[in-house]
Length: 522
Image (tube, rainbow, N blue to C red; front, side, top):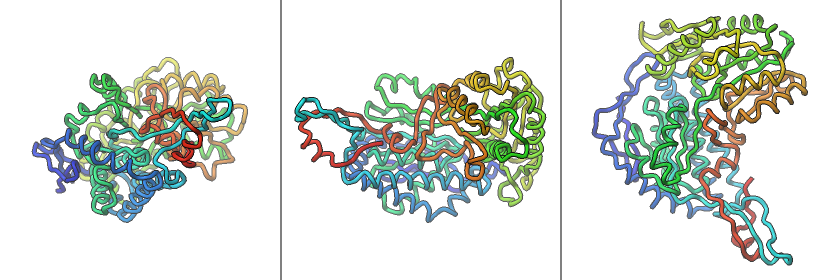
């Protein structure tokens, strides 16, 4: 069994306490163990500030971009190994593992490309300058500078690779060192990624550190120039954001949390149309990919009353054919949820939703996975709950079941009604609207935009190229209002700004141009 060490203070440290055990959720076989007891977290933060920060800030933006490119290349060379670890420790199918591991390398490569165009400056312009004197001799210019602290990156269990890659890409390009803290239950992939990068010899000292287990008192050492970027549950996000030490020191906090994402089908979409086919394909993917353990997965499905029977029947037909089991078996199309706790939460959540409606397929009964030992593994059936009154069933708008579970409900077919129902989720990462009527789609944008970080418009024109609402691209915003955390990540260079300070310069325009060169943010 592998012992995971933490990479802090420039060395690999093994904790001394009772270890936590990481298992294969398909079989419950122990894979690794880890402890962080005795790890010097104050020293890790100090190492980042005193060694990592200066090393990164000494680099130009172009040099930091080259670092990201080298990181992406190093991870690509170990892709097969990382995919295998993702399948074993995450319970992922190979396709699901690629979604995570390739997403990490892709995010690093995308930000390497963005950073390459920023030139040899160490400072980014923020928009156009403005003349402060009639003759143009006195000039004002906003610039973006790296914060002189550390970015603590706390990631959820479902994306141990991508969560690390996308957050680290933004922070390192900004010039801020990172301490990554993956969820302990699936930390194997992140641990190996950091080990690969360390062995490649490409990381500036102190630029990347890893906590492979409990964070101990790490957060108590954060200060005004530091950033805490968290992905996980809304309850944990609230706890982190409201800590007295975080509040009193004005630590920058970004939260990406629970999200009851929605999919809305326009009324009257023909069953034989490309739009309807895309709708069903996306629903199936978002419910079953990574066993529904995605922050962008569709949880609420809204269709016109007259379309309920057809849509529910078609979706049930697809879900009923899913082979659930040990992802080492090539016939398996959906693996387990990641932990025993997630299994218990899924079963309880299904029962709570079922109390508000009826189970169209699936359910909370125990399930033996194909290719798994009897009674072992954390398996949940793909489950669709039919709720005939979306307004009297608060639970479907307030309780997220983080697994292969969604509820289908009627609406009156208008954008206004859909927007009112979607808003009951109190803010989401993404909403999807499927229809070929531009006026209907325009109404959906107007009604849904304030309540969602991203809108995915499915139609016949994109049916051959659209990748589903679950795909978060480096160049587009990832985040959402309200319950979803009210945070923003990615979005091109806007994602880098989380780790920067905006400063207004005033001076001779010729001097400013000489200092800043031609760099400018988006």
